Image (tube, rainbow, N blue to C red):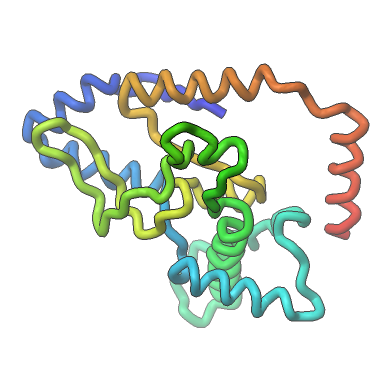
Length: 216
């Protein structure tokens, strides 16, 4: 999925603004990027999330989140009363949302390097996915090149958008195309997927049917 934002600045225009000393633009850009995608878990480190997911899987009523439909949020409440039942239900749902996103990411988004095809089967023996990722304690902008390094504390997952992860419940990688090189790389990546043999229709509907049956 590629989203083109109408009237968005070009990569060169963004770079010029960043290098031009526009601190307010830089602040708002970082704020936007951090709100759009992240490379970290909500509730802890990868080891902590993995342990929590394991403990949850031991419960009798546990179901794999990747095999169920997402639970919709309760009706929003405009009040600010700390004792409001509706507000408490909303707070509870958001806690559930963050935990569920973490469990899904830990299940399907963690990369594991191997010599198998698609990872290190090259003459350099290097991961094709460029893992492990570089880590940054805060989002920073290089004052000489305009390059943006996003805040990231987990080396083995790509950046993602939590709401998409919650809805799709599968491996989703989300990135901002801030350079011509990045745009070309993604177009090649998407084109490669488009040319792959498609899933047979009856197999697709069998999968959809099984998901609905498990969610009842």
